[in-house]
Image (cartoon, rainbow, N blue to C red; front, top):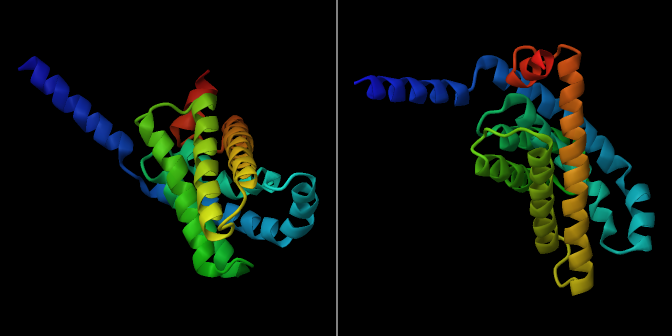
Length: 208
């Protein structure tokens, strides 16, 4: 009887831990909107930034493109709930598309969906229980892989194998460092400032 009660309590606790609160929805939405504006701004300056990098080594431009992966990893590291990476990245993509994207509204949103799903699947692989730096890096890398596959299918059909290999590797490394590493550092900075006190991410760091 005692084991049954303990098991029921554990299940209930896990259910509550994964349940979205109003503050989760609000903060994830705010993060998505804020990063969506950054996405749009990055698109405005993308041509002058990517051109010399692509000229140096075709395919290498996928590394700085990882800026467009930040929202999903950042949102997940803050909210720590199933769906956070996908939701935040998708909101950011929608905001970017509404402001005006050179790649078209629907394709921008589709890209956000794929990229957010990449990070989401990685966090799910760890059962939404591990939020340390290595997992953040892997989530960024997974989002980068999703971006690379999506771009090669939609924008670089028939690309040379060498280009495709460089593009995929650059996207994965850029995703890990930019989306994974910088998002992890950003969360720690916000937590130290007390901005995440209502979240486990903030309470853990302040307690440590």
